[in-house]
Length: 226
Image (tube, rainbow, N blue to C red):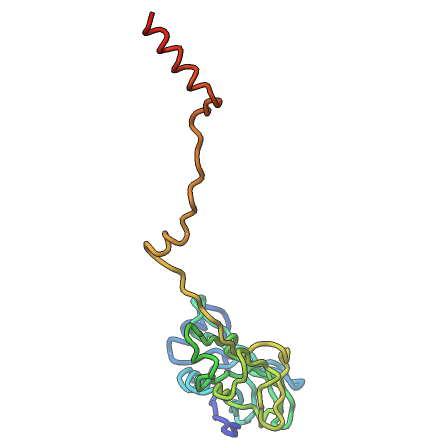
């Protein structure tokens, strides 16, 4: 469980618009908005480097300081650039530490199951995040999944052991990881030898009736004697 709550110093944004936010990001600030708990939404900016490093560590909750006041905020949404590889905007929701929320937590798979040690086996991870519900103070940074304890070829959400107070809200029958067998296809001459069908007999001329050949032969002999 993570009890670390990073502190973010926020500044009020006096202007909006894509051109302004682009210039803002060029100075190392990340545009954001704070809303919730019956208060008016506030357009702010926070330190981009600190924000992104905290997100990479799996942190969801921040103490945001603005204008002499401090509020506990949960990262509710991230907006990415058109390439999808950089965060350009953050939505913060005001919360208290004992409030129950639903969040997506990164899955950290470790180990190799016995089923994946068979020849031709490939281990796949169906999802990289899992939605859970818990109190804000109990939000885990990541969910560690030890695949060495995986029984059979599939591990489902129902088999996942979570910490006390944390409950998965995803379908319990959804697969987290699975082992599949890959059969290699024959290539080259071997593939041709196996796959090539036997060519059927093709009839190019009408077969002679029985006895026809003999009659024709006797007629030719008679002509020679004449």
